[in-house]
Length: 380
Ligand SMILES: Nc1nc2c(ncn2[C@@H]2O[C@H](COP(=O)(O)OP(=O)(O)OP(=O)(O)O)[C@@H](O)[C@H]2O)c(=O)[nH]1
Image 1 (tube, rainbow, N blue to C red):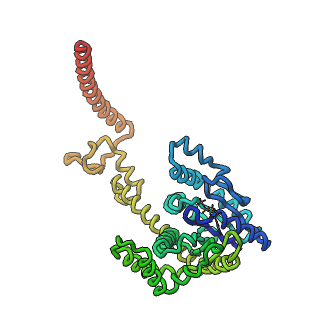
Image 2: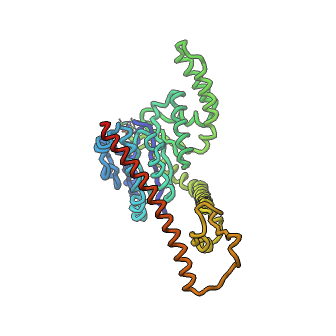
Image 3: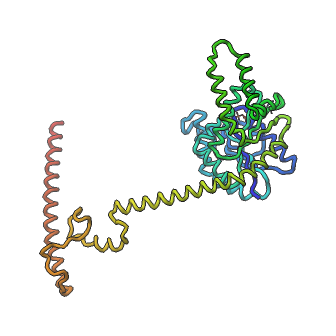
């Protein structure tokens, strides 16, 4: 059975690394140790034992110095460098896939460096086309307790879902500080969310609010209802380990969903792409043949016709041999030696004339060039 891959994504400080550490120890305690991958090149310390660590092959600080980049540019470049080896990574994981049930992947805190970069897409796609892959979007619960921050976070999650096209679990972390019940309620009951929004506006209104913000958040929350229906939502505490069994149940549920819907959809997309590529190749071959003026006829026939270059001036008659009106009978039988003589004589005279012409024009150009350079020399 293919191991389920869980890619942890979340804003900086949401607790991805702590979550990974807790998930790792939770699975170890269940005697189901996972395969752990760290894709954050800038992290100083990884508090869990990673089987594959991007920092082993790519030195973030050197990338910064060598390519003269800032912190985010260096993360993207490190990921680009890593993405070139992703097939080897997948092979490594595949080789050992019999001995674990889960692959867990940590990503950089700067979400956009991973989600919106080409390399992030390549890495995600490589996993998703080999193993059932799901996204765990980690949210800092205490920092999302205001309706506006909450909706911003959900919009971000929504964009990630549509970008990756993979099943997603929203993980409300840090429930030891604040329970995630309020968020679950907001996601399931639109009226409760509106009430919270109204209350927030009253409490925080300093007289500068135009009401525009509230109506915008209102419409967004309506729009997000469809998005919420596709999600599994769990509350966890990476500190205490609370909610991790529930999280693993959600992973199982999403893996079933992946196998049922996403896999078929992905296969359809890949097939469509292959067909598109095939059609594109056929079209460009046809275009090439047209440019070469082959017109779809078998190439050998054309070569035979085109080989008679002596009788045709370049560009004339589209490469076809025209017969002179006074050429006489279509076919005259002569002895091979005579024919050879005729051709040689004609060719020799022709060649002589062409050499002469070429020599004259070259000499002319050369002499005028020499005159020009002498004049330039005298001027200097
Ligand atoms: N109270 C509480 N704090 C937590 C929990 N999980 C993480 N933290 C704290 O949140 C802060 C950020 O945690 P990290 O795990 O470093 O977060 P991260 O998302 O990996 O951060 P970046 O790698 O910078 O993106 C740290 O101070 C953690 O101690 C939790 O469940 N409860």
